[in-house]
Image (cartoon, rainbow, N blue to C red):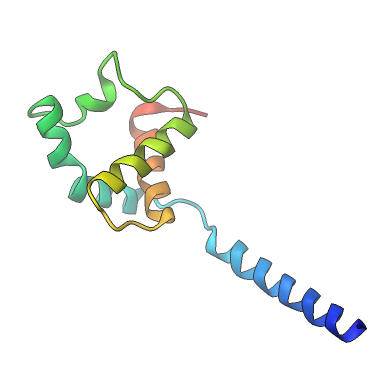
Amino acid sequence: MRQNLARFTQAAFCTLGIVSVAHSAPDTAKGQQLHDRQCVECHKGAVGSDPSKIYTRPNHIVKSRSALSQRVTFCATQINAGWFPEDEENVATYLNDKYYKFK
C-alpha cells in the first residue's frame, strides 16, 4: 500500500512539473506572426482595407480579457487554423498588448 502511494505521489509531482514547464509566458512576437499570417485576410473582408479596424471600431465585440481569449479561440476554430492553446494565447496576448490593453 505504501509503495503504491509513493509511486502515485511521484507520478503526480512529475506530472505537475511537466505542466508547469508547458505554461511559459505568452510570446507576443509569435502571436503577431500567427495573426498576420492567418487573421488579416479574413478581417480585411469584414472591415475593408485596414483589418485593424475590427479591433478599434466603436462597436467591437470584445469587452474583457477573457472575452478576447474566447474570441481568438472561436476565430481559430472557424478558420481551422490548427493552433494549439498556447498559440491562441500568444495571439490573444498580442492583440491585448497592441489594441485592447485589458488588465
